[in-house]
Every structure is written in structure tokens, then in C-alpha cells.
Image (cartoon, rainbow, N blue to C red):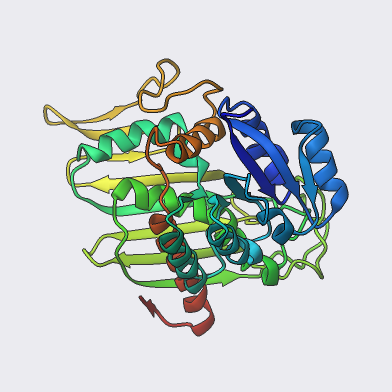
Length: 360
């Protein structure tokens, strides 16, 4: 334990129990040291499931941050607390992984960047879909310009009837929005990362509240509370980048659309294209004929991630962060990249409210 990073988890709800706690428990370099939640029973449950007898529990994150033994902090709260807690943790000298989205808006994201720069500590954001085998393979291709100049892309996160009915997901005030900021953020992050393009010029967006007041919904997690469902049920955006490239972003929790697909990207370049609509498919022209290539991603290790643990995206994410803290590698998701994702999401919401394009 003496040589392990002491990790603290602020927020012990679904994303903690389903992703971060199991992944860090499999990480040989981490001691799950402290658990904090505004509901003390949830912190106690997290300790019982993932901690040790010596692990600590808190109901107030400020008290937790006063513990100088803590090395890294995971911010796993509703979106409206991401900025406040992340800034406080960085100011307290802790390295931070904050769950996606980075912040409610770009101004908050900038505050987080400023706190990172002042503290000299690391800050990353929980975009685990970058660590999927198809994403890792596609990034290798785009990094080598195998698709050429990518000038059109689609970022897709479409659910037919999968509205999260627990916690505060459907509360616009606490989350900043609905499917756009919740799952659309993953698709947009993947797309910008593959394009290596973080220079938006303007966007046009529209949000819809067409299904969120309906009952007998067919929702996979049961009917939602129509009074509590204040966020949009679907949202769409068209983003023009400074170099002229365009991104079409589609997101929904509830939409009368049969072909559901979530956290994927489609890229069109002048040498070839790629999509994740039926596994990873690369399309190009070979010897004068159209060709589609489907890489076999079932075998082979990820060559630039080291350390023990599983090969799931959340495990790779966990080890990449702690390796960076330990000086054994670099962050794969930078806060600067994530801030641009937040900037664009906010722009789409602002465009939807104004009915006009939003210029960055």
C-alpha cells in the first residue's frame, strides 16, 4: 500500500460503481483510500465493496480534500458540480479525473483549465470510448492520414427508448441538458479526436421536447416522470470548423428511429472513409474499384498501454491516468480537448435557444 497512489472518489453513484471503482480496483498502482457522497450510506457501501478497513468515508468533499495523503481524485457527481469540485481538488494539490462532460459550459471548463495550470497537476476527462478496440485502431489510421483530409463527419448517439430514469439525468438544471450533453458528448469527442480538429467556427443546433411528456413509453428502464423530465429528449447540431470541415451531431434518448447506435463516428476524407455502423469499416478505392475493409479486432494487445488489469476500455482509461500521474506515460484525453467538446455542446444549445447560428 505504501507505494500505491491513494485515490479518493467523490460521488459513489452509478458511474462510480459501474465504471471507476471496479476499474481502479483492478489497477495494481492504486489504493482505494477514500469515498465521499452526500448520501453517507452510498459512501459506506462503496467502502464495503471496494475499500479496506482503513479506507475513509466522507459526506463533505471539502473535508476529504484536506487529507494531504490523497494523490488522485475522481469527480463522479452530477454535471453541475464538476467545475466546483475539480477546481477545489486541483487547488488542494490533487491530480483529477473528472467524468464527462467536462463542465456545464465553456466558462466552467476554462476555470478548470486555469486551476490545472496554476496547480501543475494533471486533469483528464472520462471519455472511455476512445479506448475501445475500434477507436484505437481508427486513431492509428487517422494519425497516419490514411483517410486523407477528413472534411465531413457524423457523430452519432441515437437511442430509441433508453432514457435514464434514475438520479438527476433528466433534470436540465443539474445536468445542463439531456442526451446531447450525456451521450452526444461521447460521439463528438470521438469525432473531433479522430479528425484532430479542435477549431470550431460556428454551429447551428436544435433540441426537441417531443416525447418527454408522453406516458406508456416503452422505455427500457421504465416510464419516466414527465414532470421531472425537463431536459430535451433529442438534439441535433451542425458544426462548421475553421478549416471548412463539417460535423453533423445526432443524439437522442427517445426518438422514433429503429436503428439505435451510440458513441460512434463516421469520417469522410479525400483518400478514404470509415464508420462504426457495422463494426469498424474502412472504405476506399483499390485498383479502380470500390472496396470496404473490416479489420479483425478480436486478437492482439493494445501496444501503447502497459500495466496489469483487464483490457476493457475503462481499465485502459484507469491505467492510462495513473501511469501519467506516476510519470510512466501521457494522458490520452486532455482537458484542453474536452473543453472544446463542451464549447461546441454549449454552442448547439445556445443556437437552439436563439434560433440562429452560434459563432465561437
